[in-house]
Image (tube, rainbow over all chains, first blue to last red):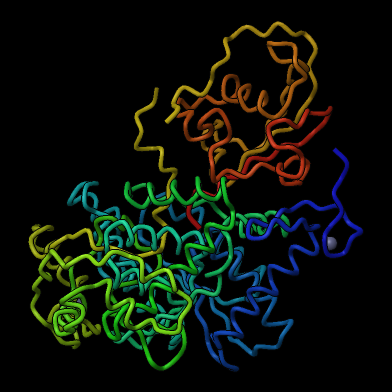
Length: 424
Length: 118
Ligand SMILES: [Zn+2]
Ligand SMILES: [Zn+2]
């Protein structure tokens, strides 16, 4: 087959075919356009301001490595004036983090960024290995996930940094959207779409500059730039539901590559239909979501079972109940709030009466954890509850482990889904 | 789901082979003896006498190189599992005709999983 010339420079040989538009590009043009699009995402959403200190949640894996590399490049190219720091969490899983932390250490040198490693042992007094030793492999992802969500915030707070960026990509977000769609969880679906999550529960702002970047292009960028990354795989995390959503997304991509961004955009459009407050939509800025600080975070482990139903859900349920329209008919809300927007087809959606009564949960207010002082929707934060259980040798007493989990952070959890299939 | 992807038998009748460099990354190396780079001698013809192409290479790797029994992590529905990128001499295999690309002496074929964590 004769070499295809690059669609942009028309001279070099095309090596990349872009999933979102089938454009055929050479290595140089691909690298440039990939970076430019992330720059556009950053500026369109005003993600950063000059002089801002930013912690990059760094696992040593492809997404956070590409994020660090691209931010370094863009900060220099466009003079953002950022103070970039790599922040890594050491869960204390022997052998698992050793290699990835070595990768992050090399990245710190390569990108000339300071590196801060925060260990579960120093934060919680327990390493994951010790947790597993006590409670066994089943259910330990609850601990890993809850601990990890706080660890990034706490690590950032310790450094006096108020903004954490994570490497979530379009595939991750599409995956999370599909999971929430399949669960019928509109509020979580809405929240999963935000590029920025401002937390009411902590000082720390989180954002996802790679939100519109295809995982395929992230991998190709790392490959063509020769980036040094480590393949992370949490040895403790079976995660069947996310795995299925992931397989679905990848299968769709094979047939219609644009599907991934289409799902992300559909999610954004659906988020606009969620009644004010229910999805936690913020008025402050476009595409900003306000969440409970414990609700979403990077690097949750074993997301399928890592989440207790928190007060924030209760507050949302309350809003939902208070909303007459919502009580009557969920679909109608979407139609009525939607005038003038580009969803003409919605009117044809059959109106389904609400058959399930809203779940009732105690309404709770944000406050500080009475044990550790961390901002929490409950008197005692989830980490402290888990710790209490661990310390009392009663690990599963205090937390109700639900399926309402939308942590779209496969950093640690992703694995080849097929592992659940028996061989042969 | 196709969990018996290796359809070919064990007899390789062709004597002629071509040297090919095969590389696995992004976690796929775990399925191939935890080794990233492999030099293989690929028969120039498949069992039906057709010139060896990528489809044949994949089956060949599955049968001869992959020690891991979980073949479905590499191959699904008779082709490379979705989520695994294939680069032929650094070019996306979609630019080269995917499974029908006929391998040349000294080609480098890279399989990268995007399915592992980042
Ligand atoms: Zn070019
Ligand atoms: Zn606490």
